[in-house]
Image 1 (cartoon, helix red, strand yellow):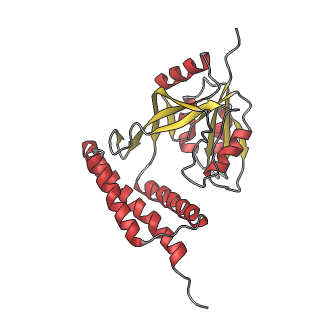
Image 2: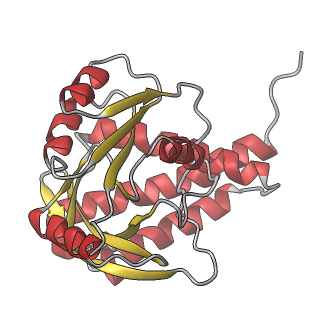
Image 3: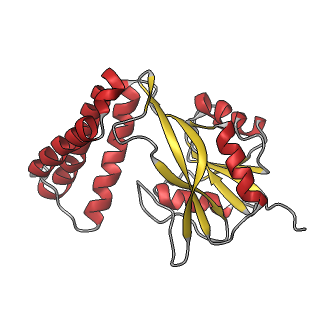
Amino acid sequence: MSSRPTLAAVLIVKNEAENLADCLATLDWVDEIVVLDSGSTDTTREVAEAAGARFFVNDHWPGFGKQRQIAQAHVQSDWILWVDADERVTPELKTSIEAILAKPTTNTVYSVARLSWVFGRFIRHCGWYPDRVLRLYPKALTGYNDALVHEKVTLKKGIKTKKLKGDLLHYTYRDLEHYLVKSAGYAAAWAEQRQQRGKKGSLCQGLLHGVGCFMKMYLLKAGFLDGRQGLLLSLLSAHSTFVKYADLWIKTETRGPRA
């Protein structure tokens, strides 16, 4: 009987000392932990190494997709489980992953349901749950694309996708300031990526997409069932959507002051 394939948990991080210990505590059953840092100034390295992680640094930020590619290149194990520092693997998810490794396939990528804690409660509506993301696959099978933001696992012809049981708990925002800073960073990366593709944006597009975002999250996706947090999250998401298009408009349609 062949032995069970080895599994690496892989993270890309920056200044995650506050989150990292709790995250890695839910990964103490994997064969290898790889952490790729992009220039932390806190104790992220110390926390990672205390948990037995193999720690690497690439502080020349190439975008999320390429940073994940670099991290994957450091992996020595057969399979990869991607986790973010603000996520926690539940016992049910662990059991589901171990069952897959007990009878592994070579052409399948597995998705995980994320359950996000936002502003004091788990969000089960707003279109945020189950929020399935592809996170588990054989290292030799595939990897992430080159996207600056909203990177995705490349699905070549013949690759199947299946669902894992259990949730990945996502403690996404510490407070409103953290949300706004993180959202602004994503918006800037999104606008830059669109600009590189020759796309343009307008404030009208931003308004339409922003209003559409709110209507979809709060009404169609029943965000009102998540109480005041659902309302706040729907409003903030609408704002973030508008900001993406506004940033693209500024980058492509406005000029700097004349010399």
